[in-house]
Image 1 (cartoon, helix red, strand yellow):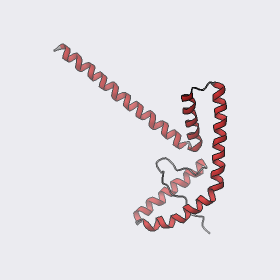
Image 2: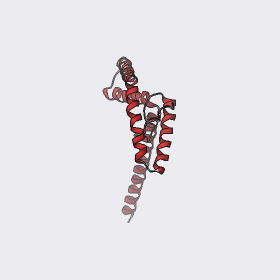
Image 3: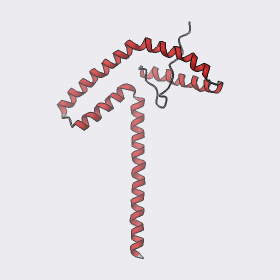
Image 4: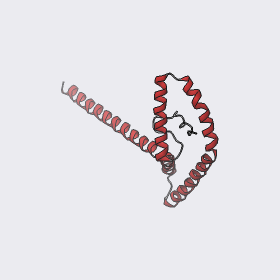
Length: 145
């Protein structure tokens, strides 16, 4: 009987440890993802660069050179986005009335809130990236004439 009781204690302690480890891992990953998403493209780029540098086991001088290269890459991509911005905005603005025509009144209200969140995110981050949880957020409405 004592062996059975000991086995249950060991199993219970193991289960509690697994549960605590799972919760801790989940919380760490959730916070990491939120930090990356809230930081916009630059934070995401730094995260990817850091993960690559860790996996490659770069030394200090390699890491500095690698970070400089990644900064150049980010700047090049940003320049391409800026150059293509007017064309992208035009395409998205053409889609907006079609989307609105498709939606019910309650959905239009949600759509308007999504647009407002998106505009606010763009004000704080500057780049055209969706806020966390809004991967499909539409563009802001066209400027009033």
